[in-house]
Image 1 (cartoon, helix red, strand yellow):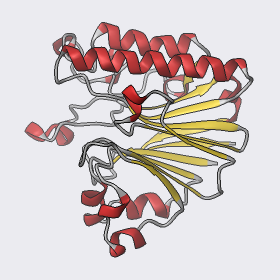
Image 2: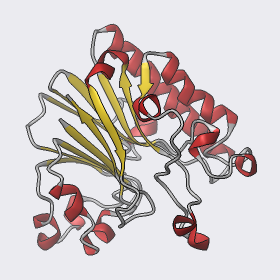
Image 3: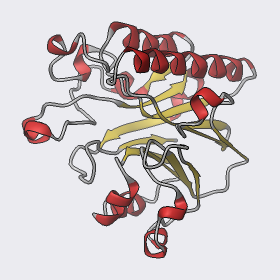
Length: 253
């Protein structure tokens, strides 16, 4: 079983670059896109024809903003858009699909770089999601959370941790929430497999950051502890272009 996550920073731009051809050529069981920045009715017939799998789409109410899409090989047993709270769901950040014995959350976590109000919103988003996952774990569900977390968890996860200690995305309170998920029955399976490996999934477009290796690891797979024995690999596809993020792949037994 193969799941790919990718913040495409605008699906119409990605399609214009034929960037998604790579993702579909990998024949994933699920492809989770974040920051699609469009509604399906804004896609041309030609663009829709380039989407090679059935999908569920969750767009933000605000045009050209946020949004996620999940593509799948097999019809999920259950599809839920959002987290059941309008405060967060108006921004089109979450799709849940349940099938093959686990619940997959495709999430575009809020970015806190527009000020303290958005940092607070981001932290509240983390809290609401964790409460939801705690309840699902109590019911015996296995969960995979993937997407753009907009937070680098540990110093190893970004090139310049010291310089970014007061930057949203590496604030102590943001990092603490990622840790809370790990303390509540989740495992960051990339870091579990590769404790000392330095790879990034996002680079600013400024100052040739990608070419210079100045990046952040923002795109994760957190999986329930019960699922960890099924994890065969997590692959960061740094060389795949088309966005300021690169795709990340989870391979399950």
